Image (cartoon, rainbow, N blue to C red; front, top):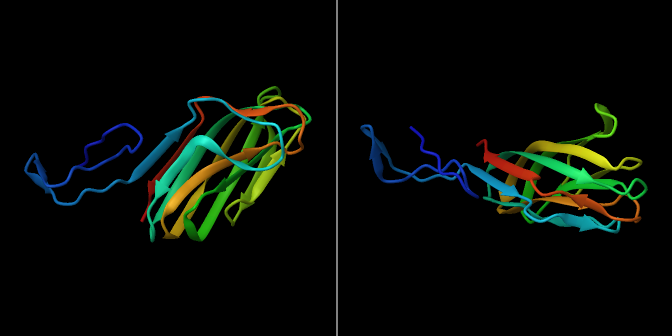
Length: 171
């Protein structure tokens, strides 16, 4: 039996309570969620943590994660995306996919990575939707964070309000 509490740490079970004859003995927090509430702008090609798109993860756990990103870009400056953080990963694998909103369905990034801070880039368009999804097994807890920059420093590229990051315990 599971009760859900919505907020920054969704999907919380309540400990030491009895519900419908079932006693819940241990509290667990299985899902973490984060959201961009202020547009995040970049004017250079140096990756930086996106304000608001970071979740805390525990050590010796495996998480599945997914980021949905709404991006505006300078056509020359483009976009650069990565997953990083302070957590120590014993294993990580993630795919980055980005589509051009101006030419619907046109793939601009389709890449797989197996190390934190590995990035992918695209340029030539001004509006993108991106999805980063994968798994991480941690040997030490910390944060899991979306990183963003331009592929080449030119103009301003942005992660827009409403972009999200969700991480959920798998094991």
